[in-house]
Image 1 (cartoon, rainbow, N blue to C red):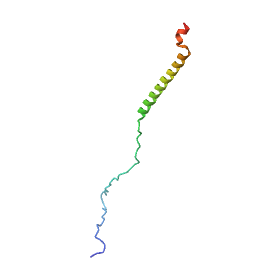
Image 2 (image 1 turned 120 degrees about the vertical axis):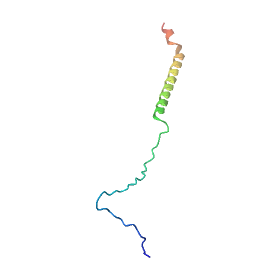
Image 3 (image 1 turned 180 degrees about the vertical axis):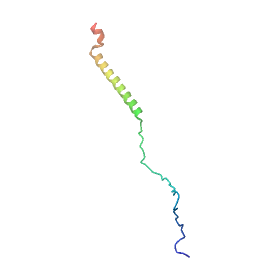
Image 4 (image 1 turned 60 degrees about the vertical axis):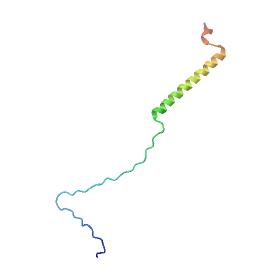
Length: 77
């Protein structure tokens, strides 16, 4: 009994083409983190907040004008 296991002897051709089988390996990449909110949703929320702030500011100005003596149009004419 031989001490080493019998193996396959490699044979390279002296003429012709030599083919090599290439097995592609799996390449792992870093996971991509997705935002919780999309850019469009963030823009819409920003626009809505700005509109609400504008309405609040106009309400405060109207309240100040009302405290000062009523409407501004009737006093001019």
